[in-house]
Length: 250
Image (cartoon, rainbow, N blue to C red; front, side, top):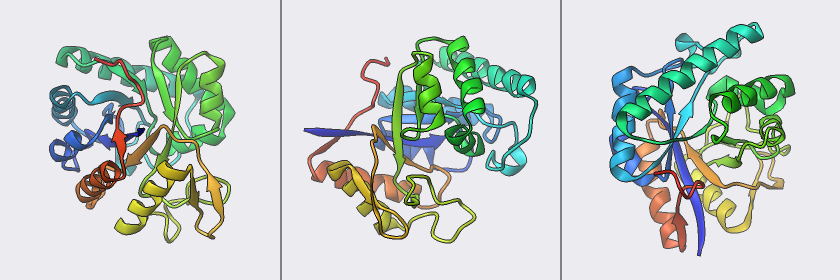
């Protein structure tokens, strides 16, 4: 039987976390730098514990005003300090909840920049390894962060986005461009095709191959719950098991 991990970005104070979490196998939970209160983060952690969902930290540029989705120019030392603080904060909340923090997936602009900027990717991978050498990294296939994490012998897993359009290069269509976020049916079709064939169509209708251990939904989208529910049902109907990419996380 085929399987795929289904993850979403949660703990941001703007989605229906409690309804979405039972449909997932992994959850990327805010570290508080881009969105979400401590109560939001704890609520997500507690629900993940209840439903046996694997938990990852979702650190960001410290930019709540822009939801962490705009690039920031920061001295390397300041960014390192911020990321270290975020991981320590999240680790403490996870420990207090009795949840294993199993992996790290950067958020927003930090995620996108670390996919193409080798210097930033190395900084991020080093912060993760320094925090805990057993942490896995979730990132884009073949990205700079993928290679930086591999270079430090961190476990690395690759993800694709259920609800985002792709360029022929395999990169995401920038959010400020029309068609960057897929409609409901298009997202379902793209996701099923990817899991079943390992390929999708770009915005200009070129077939591209993507190696993906996980599919991501954006928890802040108004359609997130419906998409999660329909995608979960469609995958299982197609004989595809929803299972975390990290087998042992409890």
